[in-house]
Image (cartoon, rainbow, N blue to C red; front, side):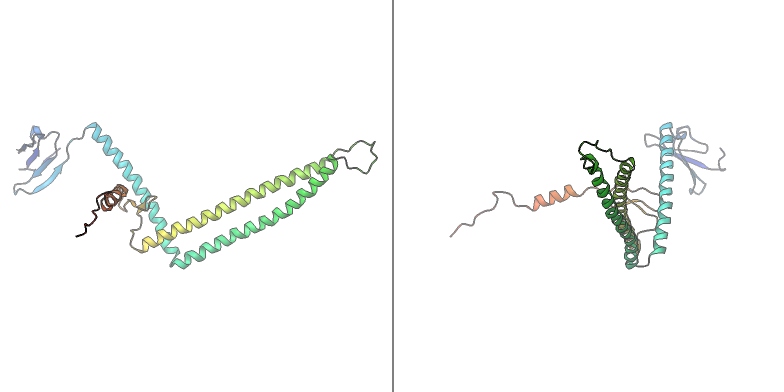
Length: 248
């Protein structure tokens, strides 16, 4: 390492004593050092040598900051797309209603399929009961006929199709709820951006700022429930403390 000519080096040791030297003082070997020119102005700072533990901490912080910045970049892309897609709250409502209407139409079609399948299941089930009960037009001495394999297969297929349609209806209803929740979330985000929230700001599930656009992670806000309880306690009258005025 080379140093400027006529430079003075300064550092403070563990005891708070300041050391100076034209060359690096031995006491400054593992300390932050300030290099000062002849006018007394700071030329540069030389960082202290890090311990292995400090190096690990710094590397972990570097990795975490990189993750934060990736989250910020992803959020910024979504924010810009959101601002570019919607110009007013009414546009959110119109877009949501269109998507919901499509899902409602799909459910209506599936419900029609349910009615059709129920009719088929009832028909095949009635025919199966005919064979199970031995209700044949043949004489009583005749052997009860087994249900035809085709009938057995038709009933099983209709019942399976009915179950499949029920599953599709449930999935479509779940998708509808998801679509509505997504629009509500995007609308809330859009409104905060319009109110001044910086593009790329990452929020937590409570809506508090978690990561700023420059990648700094903010600590969660302190809980206020305890403070509110204390205030309520102070405001509440103490039992037995009310004095009854005496009559004169």
